[in-house]
Image (cartoon, rainbow, N blue to C red):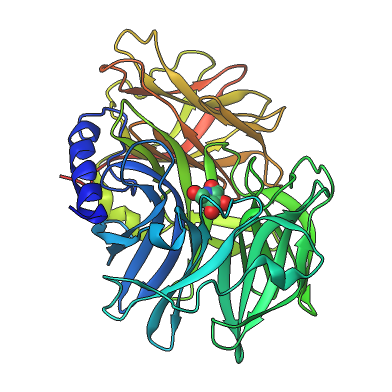
Amino acid sequence: MNNLQIAKESIEKARKIAEKCPYRPKYHFLGPSNWMNDPNGPIFYKGEYHLFYQHNPYGDEWGHIHWGHAKSKDLVHWEHLPIALVPSNELGEEHCFSGCCVNNNGVPTIIYTSIGPKRLSSTGAEQWLATSLDDMITWQKSPHNPILTLDLHGELDVRDWRDPYVWKEGDYWYMTLGGHIHNTQAGIALLYRSRDLKQWEYLNPLCQGEKKSKMTGKNWECPNFFSLGNKHVLIISPYKKVVYSVGSYMNHKFTPEKWSYLDHGRVFYAPNTMFDKQGRLIMWAWIHNGGIGGWNGCLTLPRILSLDREKRLKFYPVPELQILRDSHFHLDNVIIPPHSSQTLESLRGTCLEIIAEFEVNNPTSFGFKIFQSKDHGEFETIGYDIEKKRLWAGKEKGKIESSFGEQHIKFHIFIDKSVIEVYFNYSECLTSRIYPKSDDSEGIDLFTTNDAVKIKTLDIWKLKSIRE
Ligand code: DQQ
């Protein structure tokens, strides 16, 4: 049996266990089973969206990193395709780390970070290339590999060098890679240029973080760099919460303005972006953790990123997701009294979409109870504390930075078994994992602590599964 057959058997075995897991999401994207982490190389190709992802086909823990692959016509339903990249052990490769996929004059081309037992991720990473000649079903690694090595930087001692993000500008391809310079305690994104994707020249640092910065950390993974309107945006994953900055790009240098959290959840990491044929910038990120076994990790729902007037990002779920909507509940103009409300007594569910607009006059904490047991004793909460400007969902929380009309607050929430995604006024997001305590933890309700709040409109849909 070759490696791919062994991988297939292992995936099949784990799938049977994963399918029994009550915490496994029903409409979020995940691999067929076993471990997955970062989304890689999202690309729109011949009328379909393709997504790759970091994948261990042999178990539900990180290791033996391959590239899983799936495609979709509608951004909602995904068809799994054969594993795209397998580590070439015979070439000293142990992991195919994150990267991107571009269309090079009709030839789909993956650029990724190659790691080996003798080429450690901290000091010996190389950037490799693979192409497909059969519409992305099989991939061939280039005889020109490695296409970039650390020597390119001369004296500069770059560490943890990885995660290529490539785009085209005029006659050139540009690439940014993340890492840090040894002993600086600050992350860096470096910039490179090529005419043919094979021969690369190092230009200069695209952007460097500040030493021991609270937000931008000590090392940058998975940089994403793109223009939106007349500004540029840099996203980085600095081991802690993912951050972005809207800034300006001139003479091959990006000057960040302010750093903000891309999502306040610590379970949200390593996002990757693409422009689709309608010019929408679409983003997915890895959501950490699994359930009772057989699977570990999934992706966020696709989010559309745009810029608001204050030059902050806005986030919207792609409208295509609306095809998941099933039975619907609606109410408007209801006052929720402090403490117990029981307004939504008849509603139950663990695969839901909620859109709610609140009107709030005095400081209070308010929001939703979810996963409530029949006796109402057990529940988890998703809410917002007006005074502290704190948004939370289960254990994940964050301070809201964007300004908005404090009286009107909009929540758009997706609940999918144990995966929670919250859009707050579409200007901040929070991803969380919450595990319902028991089988009957399906109730949902509204709450407010100190003062009544008015729910101006509320829509709740049960959502369909994308898996049988
Ligand atoms: N995951 C990959 C790396 C990347 C990290 C390895 C981020 O390429 O830096 O699985 O989660």
